[in-house]
Image 1 (cartoon, rainbow, N blue to C red):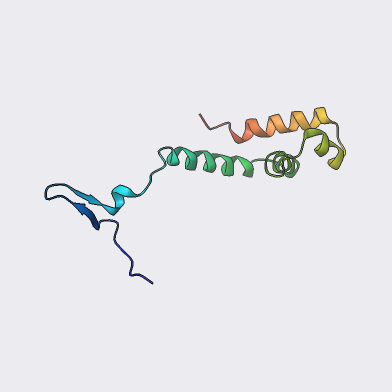
Image 2 (image 1 turned 180 degrees about the vertical axis):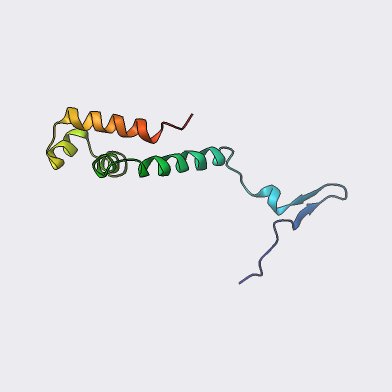
Length: 96
């Protein structure tokens, strides 16, 4: 085991310029946008009915088709499509 190292530890010094460990740690440039997007989805999911949540879960997390969902819950594919569209509109209503 190694002792923890500060991200401000110099890892290179040529006399005038120092490079710190934190300079070498990758930064996903759009990570803040991803966090905002994730928070929007989480907030939006709370606004949905149980049926809408079930459809969104099956479509986007369990990768089911609208036909498969329709058969599972006993409604038409067109109804699944309408409910899915409405749910997505609710989820992303505040996201721009």
